Length: 133
Image 1 (cartoon, helix red, strand yellow):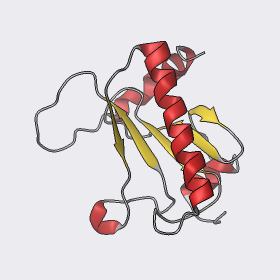
Image 2: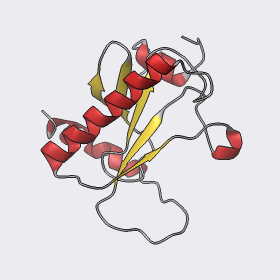
Image 3: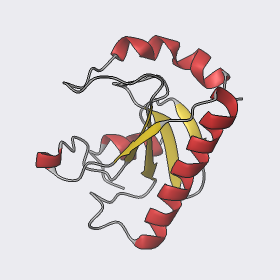
């Protein structure tokens, strides 16, 4: 775990997060700058910068956790359409250099253009998490 990595701080409990799912190897949290409702980040608890360096056994846990969260969203929320996104490197718009997968539920088709973020959605996080119980 890296001292200055925001995701490592979340894993260590030093920063608050909106936890959706957790197991020994991976954690899923709601994104702090969501594109859609239930925009979620799935990351390994151990620090690996990107897809190029994460060991395969850890990556398998991350993708299995990603599937578990997607299945949870389908079962509890009826979400049938999801983007999975993984950015690796600055040119690919990676902003936190701790490997993670975005789960971005799609409930309506948005026309191509700039991605609209909706940080105001964070106020709904307690209620959103309660719906998953």
